[in-house]
Length: 519
Image (cartoon, rainbow, N blue to C red; front, top):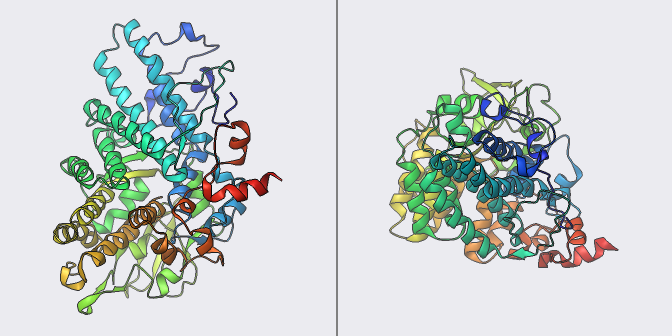
């Protein structure tokens, strides 16, 4: 296959490992697999479904979830150890040779999904015990995984190849050009509408409910897409579907860190990638944030300027003499934040527990020794999506409803504080910034911040707000030039992909850098 996306034989779908929390992945065929002899039973379809999930916990996939979603934002500075391409990413020095432009791990997952969607119906016909209901339920999971993968790709690159046919042998030869972002978003929404009708509301265990696609996960992804696409009524409706689930509940502030980020699979999780020390370690959080065996050589830290100055989202002065987040649990739990600290290490995902001294000025931070999961969607994310959609849909009429939703997450982490009031803010514009600030406080280091800033830029048709945030924390002297247009907010297409597939075109902002890199 000439396009450098990924070519996978059917056999390669089944040499992937399993996770201890999902015994259903244990159904693995042995020996040489002939396509005509496969797809006979439900268990064989389940094995390919398992491969879809297994592909998402590969390090290349999760690293890009983080780097594409947050690496170019204001939430990170270089840590004590840094990858060259990550350092360039933090400083907006992007080239088509940057390893993070490699999208193959996402197209690998997409290919697993395409293989399932093409051949699983054949197994359902052949296996009398494989019900149509079961097939539709599994299709809902696979369509959502594929849609999620494409949503990351279009936010990172804009126009990308839209491929729905599986690549299963060397005889196939794809030269697939890019489809527009508009066309892909429309297509994945159609898929998700189908998935919403057939996805399970819950599975037989909590780990399955949190670690596999449920109806809540479908609607959370739909809400995210609609918010990106500025379709605010649709976003609010999708959020409401999630918020109506009585099984979802925010964890109280004192237990949020331990239950949500250390133990995982909490009552507020919607979809969470499952990792296990015996099968697949989450090297993304370990290398980027640290753990008990690596407390000093992590790749990333939180910028000190966002803790020690007026630019901080914590202890943020607003009108009426009120200061947001004066004693915010998130400022202490998510970063190592002691009075003597000069380097603010990221503790979310890296830590196990925090113990505060009697004066409340310093804490003892204990790192985790086991691996962490990776949360894709949780309840607070959806609450704040709805808040953003409300204020964008109706600038004046949305102020109080949006503020009420912001207070839901804000007061959870500031339990002794007063509610935020509209009198503290100067109209809808200030509430928009409040929602963005609350999303930064709540979701920092979860791969969300850069996509949040991109939404602002796309709405405003200018990069001025993005550069105003990123310039505070970046050491680059070229940031304004490197983020000068909307197209510059996307990544360049990988050089090897362009060489392998001449039907691809480079993102316009990077055409000159690509031309120079070939010489």
